[in-house]
Image (cartoon, rainbow, N blue to C red; front, side, top):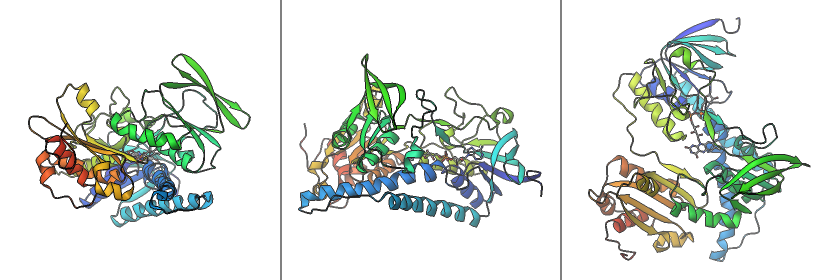
Length: 469
Ligand SMILES: Cc1cc2nc3c(=O)[nH]c(=O)nc-3n(C[C@H](O)[C@H](O)[C@H](O)COP(=O)(O)OP(=O)(O)OC[C@H]3O[C@@H](n4cnc5c(N)ncnc54)[C@H](O)[C@@H]3O)c2cc1C
């Protein structure tokens, strides 16, 4: 067989096998579509499984155990100081990733999805070519683009061997010192991992606060805890130059008109991601981009080319795996003739720091910017039995509501396991719940979930375990 000479036909071609693409392929196949999935990587699962959500959370879990062992001193329980065997930690993380990527392949194959390894490029609104595969191209009725995003290159220090998040997740070594450029969630999560593994970590952030999307009352708890773990946090600071210095690096950092030099063994650049919209022939397919370089879509995921849908990181909105997967289901259902739309009220956000931060719906900052009147009910975890029994009472849950209708507009939280608790907030928003709905729902005792009920009571002016101000 001559490489790339065969063309095949498919009802649906999906490009990219991340949490957008593979979920779309599964849902469409279940709805009776004949699906071809094209992925240029060897493994399926995209950035999330291979170099994002999953490996980062595997490392975070390991460091959390070490932190919890240290914190157990308060219970009179003393462990010898934790030490990590990097080889074992690396292979454990890889085994978690490989188990999941194999699972994705199994699920797709069982649905009869044809998986093609290669790089897809549009040649028209109903056709694409594939590079690097036996199959030279696909003629399709519909296509879903789910090509995701890639790491932003550092504007300074180009060409130097600084780490990206993908490098850091491979755990090449634990450097004696590490400067993380970027105090967003990826920089902070990975910075705390390396601090937990023993590196002296400095985080440099251009903006005045870490985790700019989150409310300050939530981030300040994490900053307080991180100060004990990180060597330094520099905000309002810009890295203007990176140079080699022996085996390490020296960074020039500008802060309020002054320059300082930071010597460090390694640098991790975590300065955002950009959508993979270039080099895939979007112009030939008639797919238009917005002013931020993302693919324009309507609420069904349809692009400016009616036969082509787009989902995930390449479309407007936050770059999050669960947003990609929800959009995937919508697009697959719509092209299979079902009524569906991405009309979600909330895309929850979680930062897996220690403690964790999570929010859904409107934030206080957004309400202020929109000049929207709100009522905020806060419940501090120090007043919560379960948080006390865990020895983790630093944190809070807040419920933001409309002063007139009492509709829940937003939920924010910082504390242990809030990555799990936020789903109740997202459900409340999706169902159009009022404060009363949260208040009259019986929450099991003693659990962290009671904090949501208590925060709703505080917002309604009827708190039990706190006092009205
Ligand atoms: C370090 C890190 C941690 C993260 N943690 C979280 C988290 O905790 N929670 C969360 O929700 N999100 C997290 N994310 C973000 C999450 O990984 C992305 O939002 C998600 O992967 C986007 O899914 P996607 O399907 O749009 O694209 P991707 O996962 O990027 O998948 C796109 C796929 O398309 C393939 N591809 C691209 N172009 C072509 C082409 N022309 N032909 C064939 N194949 C192609 C790529 O190889 C890739 O496999 C994290 C990201 C990083 C980097």
